[in-house]
Image (cartoon, rainbow, N blue to C red; front, top):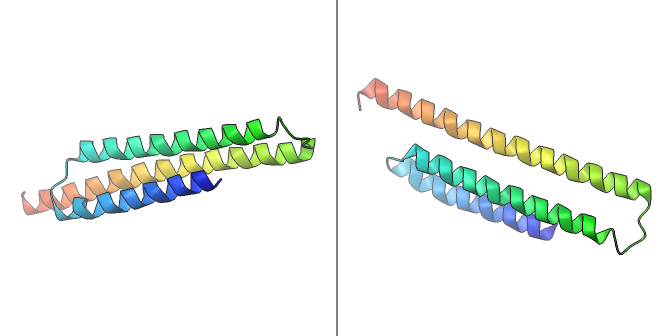
Length: 109
């Protein structure tokens, strides 16, 4: 769980650090979208590894069926939440791109 938290925080910091220069200069939106997709892929992979390790940890212990069911449900919730956050981030990037294009088009750039 700690590794997942560290990865999420690191990717957020990376995203914030990349967003600041993006506002300051003309940005290639394809490149930014590719970077966002690769960042999201890393987040997804980190979550999958973390959940796989959690499932493997059940093997060496006596875990009741209710605890196992709760853990599985929690993992499903985490996957669903990550998917929603990533979908929202991609939609936000698209919306920013559309609004900036509209502003540039209105000024004739």
